[in-house]
Length: 367
Image: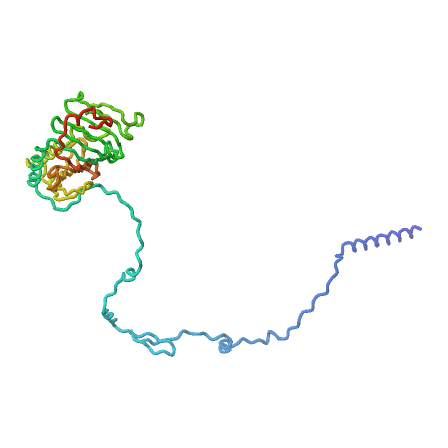
């Protein structure tokens, strides 16, 4: 019995060992090895090729063609004759008729250009050359003599001014002047300030300048408002460069005379006072004779750095204002216009009466 149990245990152990081996073995099937191809050539029998055989095996090397080019010739392509470069290049033969580079442009239609008005500072049209101070003196003396016989006059005035750096609108006025007593009456007839009236008579109306407001003068007061001002009022200085007492041809002639006398006395260069000659009126298109005065620093308070002024005299012998100053243009040191006054349509003499310079005519009342 003991022997039987021992044999059984041994068999059991052998069976377990077989199971363990079976568990450890790779269950995937095993492929048989591929057969190796047998060599048909014995490597030991292969001999290296000689240089001739190696060159025969390689493709032929293409070399660039060699040209024997003599100096002054061009290598020709296959099948073409050789060409020789000339040592000098001859000039082109002269043309029978010169070429016109813009001939093509002449055949093209011109396109219309837009018309643009470029503002240009008003200047008298120069028609003659400058002259000497002596000739200025002759023209001035003739004007002073003519004006001495004029008791009063009426004219159309076109004026524009720059006040405190601001350009005021151009105004058209009826201007009346009387020498004795010194009297000025102006009424605006153009659109800018239309209806405004100004009256000043020396020694009357308590020395006041009487003003009737016009269109656009005062939005609060409107038009037709009567006011009185001292001629030196700061309110008036904001409306004009000049005092009412400085108006008239007499003041113009006195100012020119001052500069001519200084030039004659050597107190200023003679080049600062010259006769330009015949010109044409800017607004009136009148035939004029013009004097140009170069204003120096200190000559006038309103032009501290100087400037230029032209005085133009009526040159039409048939005109009632012949020989009198009828146009003044003043420019500052930068050649910018600051004053322009043009008189035309003169009535000389006007034969005014005291009623023409009475305050009673103001406010739309007819004389």
